[in-house]
Image 1 (cartoon, rainbow, N blue to C red):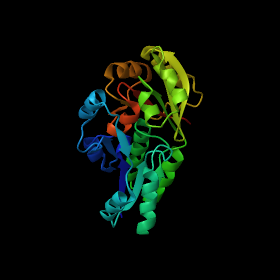
Image 2: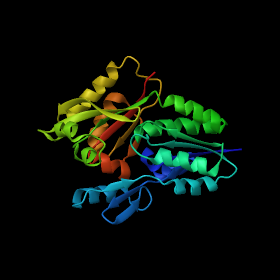
Image 3: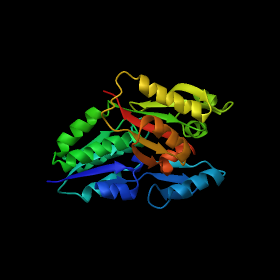
Length: 272
């Protein structure tokens, strides 16, 4: 019996990268008014950020439905299925995957709450792929990845807090700091929770904060890979890479970009 790995589109792997790794993307959707787009499938990152900058109405997002998961599960009747999904505190997608598992009554399906998103989730996906390619069972992969979720964190720097506040991912009180005098809050994503851990004036100082924070972590696991994602901010991304080193690099898709906005940077890493 082989193992099929499912991810949702907020892991921000491109369709080409997902195909190379042999994983299946189950996409969320983004809406501009009454227009609906399937993340990664019928809207490119370039198209999305162009619309984000020009459309008067803010986009909204929709989680994957239980029926969508049921349809995908049915495509793999003879495979074990390991699913790695956006933190359930950020989306109902994981819960939809669990509901679909219960409805189909299969014991060989293993949904996992990644407790993270984007670059953080990509780290877990890569490890799951490695284990699958080594011949591990779905149960073995799921148990190991579930344990690893406790060790993955992510730091984020946003150009503006407008999108996180508008999307309900951060309170308006906390978001206010990011819209004053060029202040860039630094946010930690841990256990599916977004927490403002610092604020700096200007992107350069915010990136310096991120580098300093990681270097001062007593249990930062330098033996494991790091991953980056950005919403079309390649110049600041290179500054971060010069300090922290190379890592898998992703472009935030339309769903993550709805909440991050343009110019954001994320770095995912492991703690021991």
